[in-house]
Length: 227
Image 1 (cartoon, rainbow, N blue to C red):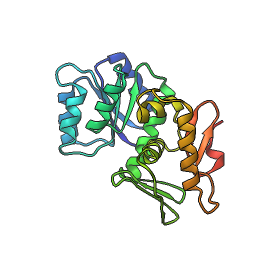
Image 2 (cartoon, one colour):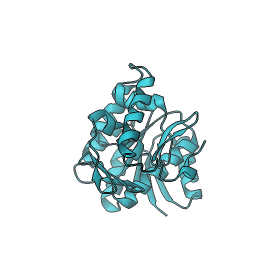
Image 3 (cartoon, helix red, strand yellow):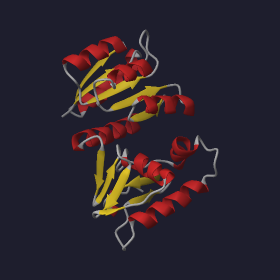
Image 4 (cartoon, helix red, strand yellow):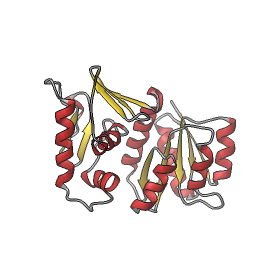
């Protein structure tokens, strides 16, 4: 499977994550300091990095700064700092996803699967059926036809694309796109409607699905929708 590096100073949590990933066949290794993590990345780059934000010595944010000078490896950031400010800071520095502590192991593993799928396909491009999303150029097309999306529409599609097959809640969309619920919840529904109109133009099949009680997800087949 995949080689995964965990940088986490909470030994109990690190052991749980190593065991869960190992049971799935991954080669998981945990260290408790960012400095050691940087050395391991240089000697043997992993497929994915699980990174705690608050570490002794060099913290996770500084680790990200140094990592991005040389490497484009996917990073899932774990932290008890769950405010929008800290999340945005981590994402701006190059984290690919963000998971606030405490979290459920099932959600952690789902996010790991999503990041590994992206890493295997190429980090800058996500495909879902005949929909192609270029994350680096912020462009999307379906069946070869360019989609003309507003900044907000693409931001939502970007978040769904980074979690293909995994529901993204309305709360998460509000937090990432509109700063943690400062806008009405129905704003998400309005923009999902806009996205569906544009991605389904020409009577194309639905790719943005509603997962009851969970949110929205990007999936190419109706039977992939859980709920």
